[in-house]
Length: 98
Image (cartoon, rainbow, N blue to C red; front, top):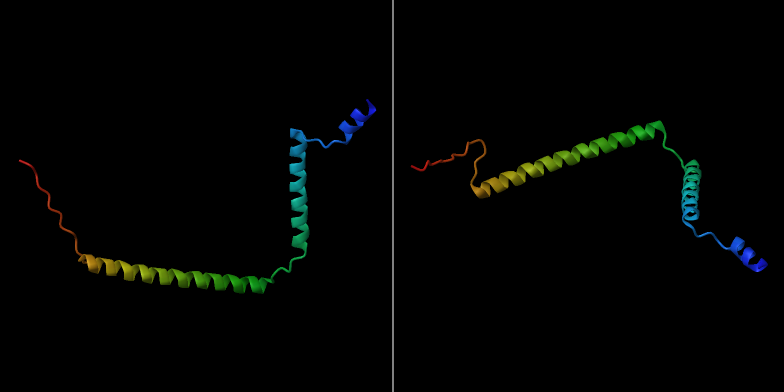
């Protein structure tokens, strides 16, 4: 009898609530580790942040210009192959059945 009760006490709980409690404990441990790792970071200075921001904005503007030029070139090329002239309205002929 005594062995049965001690085995039950020593056995790991595998019920639903014990699994949920373990899940939240792991989440808490994760955030504690993240916080401790962020303390080890070397943060950029204000001047570095400004320089990096300017570089990113310039790069994005350059890529937008390149994409616009490519779009313009390809659309003109496709229109030239299709025989469509830009700036002229297309003529649509409609017929009415008698």
